[in-house]
Length: 602
Image (cartoon, rainbow, N blue to C red; front, side, top):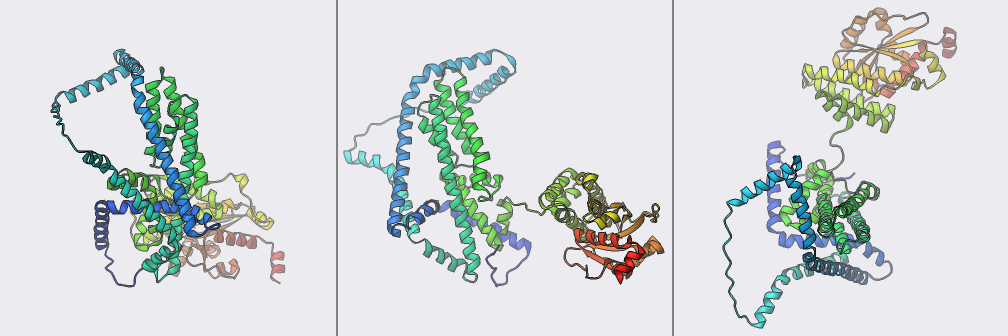
């Protein structure tokens, strides 16, 4: 992924200064958004509508000139939105006029609730307590002063002006939005070039990629939101009509419209028709059916349809969506709630492509903030072994036993050794890492029947050797030895782990069986450390020992045979999978009959 390059101007890189500058810029941005909302809000709405209509304009421009296609698409959108607004207004007027017809039914429902309150029991006592608290709270409220209405005789012009004055601001705002949408659609390519020139002339590719990413995400998300919410409104409206709820079209449209508000909108969209059903229905079953129908389809669309359609196009965490809805609602009111998701996606794209704003991607993005091995490492330090085991198992299931074990456990132990060298770990934390590693390996261990050598020669060697994995210097190396032993067992070999402080004899286990000591390190040891470890193992065992180090930055697995490296007391470096394959080759070589070995050498 390309990123917009940093400026070459030198800046202070002190964390405190950067934090202070970030807070100042954030505060200035919030103040600008709040006090400039009268100008910025129509612009934001126009840009988002341009994203929604952009696909239709691109399709129409294949058959007609661009100005004509923009005109047709914009007029169609205006007619469609206007019809929806008229339908909703007429339906709301009908609902307001029919509320008085349901007074008797509401009175009956209130009587039922009152009987529940007077019937005793836990629910009755709780509701009675709420009523008593409400009465006590309102007892001291002063009566509102009576309003004195003065009749004034105004001219006809003044009455017309007073009637039209509230409509001036909305009409002007809508006109500004329509004009901006038209000009943005007409001049899309030139605007894109201007943005590239303004923000990334030094790297046209990275800036163009950032703009394309934002346009793709926003256009896809907004289009799919419109389609899915219209489908939800249609299904809900049809179901409410079948249930006999008056003004079913209104409640379906409102339910679909409220779904544009993250999470909270679905609750409000289901609550309104449920309250109407509560007011008009004689019993209690009808409101429950209305609520159940809306909740059922909201779950189906939210958990089945939208994940299939949206996929990874949003990329924002649910918590970030909720917090952004609160922020934009505070800054821009109800319209800010509707714009919260698209604006959050824009911020995510900025964090993805601008290095100075990378923190936005970390805060808003759904991608894990830490790699799997970092998550395992942090959980082991906190002794959350169960969570760490789940992360390791998921990584192995996703990437396979070799790659998954390396990316989960191998890199984790290398990171732990690096922190140990820097003296960042306490003794208790080191113990937690080593003990937690053993528990994770027990959790992800496979059934012995599933362990099989990869070749017939390896299968014959597996029956005649046992690997003894020994920690080289300390406890972190003990964890590396345990991981390597687990990987060898997965390949069908017998392998045990011996801690670096143990003085267990290593020798022939039974007739025809050979023990191969493997001294494991999580970082490159010095020559003096390897010699000390070899002398500690004894002359015979030390000469046969293989010194291996888990190293992901540089590997020394040369083209030489493993036996040559072992004889020279050199060290094998590489990832766990490479080390295990080398150990398998070493086991095959040391278990060959002499005649076969001589023939192979000649």
